[in-house]
Length: 545
Image (tube, rainbow, N blue to C red; front, side, top):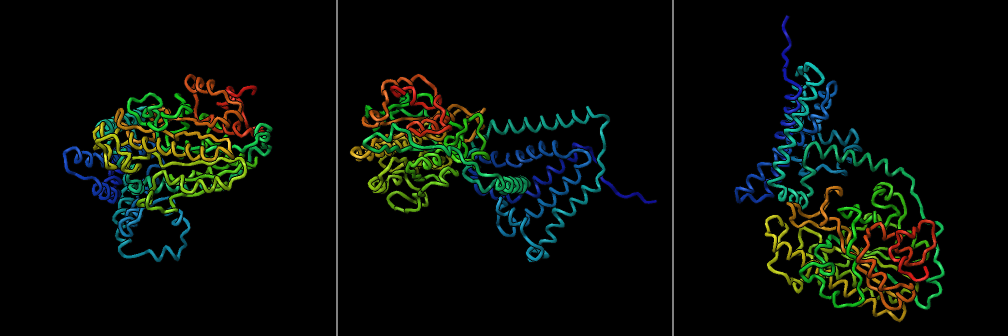
């Protein structure tokens, strides 16, 4: 009797082979795209490009070592190989990327639409990159180890070796990888099979999220007597900063004068010790407006729960959100809002991005017709990187030389920090103009401006750039944020606010974005069970409060 031909290999060799096949064969589209972006003009850039396949292989090797377990390893490997072959074909043939929308389209495709895509080229491609390798996997005999401890030991060694290689690559090339992926986010969607798995998980998560009930909070909210008895209405402008780090604010002790306009005012209170809720906008913005603290914050819960702006609107406070930073992350979904980039004013905007002064465009007209207590949120583009040089106009190019490129890892430390500091100079000017705007309306309103950045930024410290590091590991540059308050004399009088007390609190106490929700409820004297007095950073300085 003839024996059926079968390949033989160990469990670890099987895992390595699958990881190597998917890395080298099914990710060619990613590498072609990535190497086209990288300007290979030095030995360092050559080694950076060469490290990409090694890094991807090590990551896949770790994942597959944990995933491809006895009894399920062959079916899982076959599914990954077949889907990878299909993804590879569509990316090459239609020059597309596999994202959440593309995966949803695939899930909703009917049989007729699927047959329309079928071609001789697709059959050949799928056979060579999917079917034949899958048959090889099915016919491979995987030799079992002598004991469970030997099995675990081999897997542990495999993971440790790959991890050490990843760490070694990070030591030499982290400053290249961080801006590469942040500047080329579409590239991530070319990585197989993570593009398919990630987008599928997102679709499932969105499907489940859509079925969660929406929760209203603060249904008992109403204005208290403090504001009702005032002869003038109260108007607060909350400037929501972007990527400003406290370490670079001269108001907080930075040795370069990045706040020349605000420092001339004697009615500015700067808070020295303020921490963010997250290290990225998508976390910090919903978190600071929610009734949850950072430790208990849940993005899913915040998405299905009303926030501070909803409560203020319910209590008959006029609310307006003006955005120059790509959206409010769901915070302003139920209140009046404006995307100022749609104004398309050439004096402020270029290539779809606008300078923050556009946030003040015709804001005077809005305030003139306002006849109620109100809050205006101005969401800045601020110091968003890596294109720091595009965040300010020419007259604010004060600190030189500058880093006039988004390849910030190629700039020296001095020019990079100069460019970033220029963005803060511009923010300083915008805040000063915002205060001047409020001062124009002192006859009708008790006015105040509160500025708070969403998160900070790394500028090469310890090899880190930009932001988004896991909070537990993030450096202070990403979590220590600037916050400052300007108030008119009538506002302080109406709020019974002791300015000296507040200045002392701002210097000595620690605050965070957890305080915003309750502090603004207190500012507008909103009576609701949602209000927690201990988190109101102004309460202790309100006389007779």
